[in-house]
Length: 301
Image 1 (tube, rainbow, N blue to C red):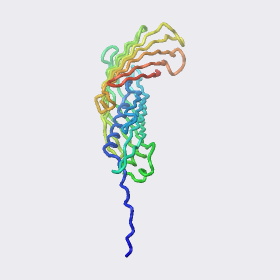
Image 2: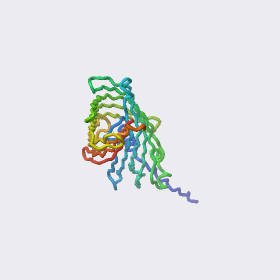
Image 3: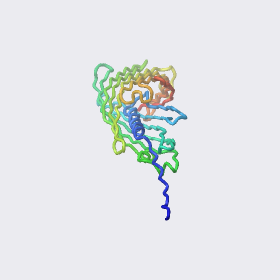
C-alpha cells in the first residue's frame, strides 16, 4: 500500500478589522470638514498621539484660504481655499495565530469655495449669506509591510495599500460682518455659523460627515508711530474662537478652540504693486487638553 501524499494546510488570511478601517475613513472625512470653510483657529494643526503603541497616530493639517467682497457698489462675496492633511494611523493585521502592525499613511487634499452677497443692516454692519461647496480626495499607502502579509491578506489590505476615497460637500453659512475704519484704528468683527455636509463616493466605504461650526473672529489695527514704504506701520491684535458642533466635535479631543494673536502690518498701497498690506502674526492657540503656537503671514489685495 502506498501512503497518500501529505499536503500542508494553507495558513489563514491576515485580516484587518473592517470596522476600524471604516471608522478611520469616516474620521478622515470628518477631518476634511475642518477645511470646508475658512477658519483661523484650525487653519494649521499638528498633533501626535499615542506614540509607541499600536494605536499611535500623527496628524498634520494646513489650509490656505481667504475671501472678500468685490466692492461696495457690487457686494458679491467670494471665498475659497485649498487644504492639505496627513494622517498616519496604525492598524493591526491578524490571522488568528500572529499579529503584525500596519503603519499607514493617509494623505488628503481638498478645495473649497463660497459665494455670497452682502446686505447692509446698519452703518458698518453687513449680513452675508453664503453658499459653500468642497471637493476632496484621500489616498492611502502602507509604509511597511511584510511579504507574508502582502501575499495573504484580505480586501481591507488592498484599500490600505493603495486605495482612495473621494468626497464632496455642500452647505452654507451666515455671517455678520462689522467693519469700523478710522485713521486712528481699524476694527473688524465677524460672527459666522457654517454647516457643510460631506459625502464620500467612488470608494469601498460609503460614509458621510457633518461640518458644523460657530465662530467669532475679531481684529484691531492701529498705527505704531513708525512709517515704512511711505505708510504707517500698524500693530495688529487678533482673537478668534470656534465651537465645533458637527462630527468634528471631540474628534481631536476638543470641541472648542481659541486663538490669540499679535503682529505687525506693512502698508504698501503707496506703491504700484498688487499687494496692499502684508501682516505677520504670532498666534497662541488653546483648547481642552491642547495648546500650541504658530506664526502666520497674510496679505491683502
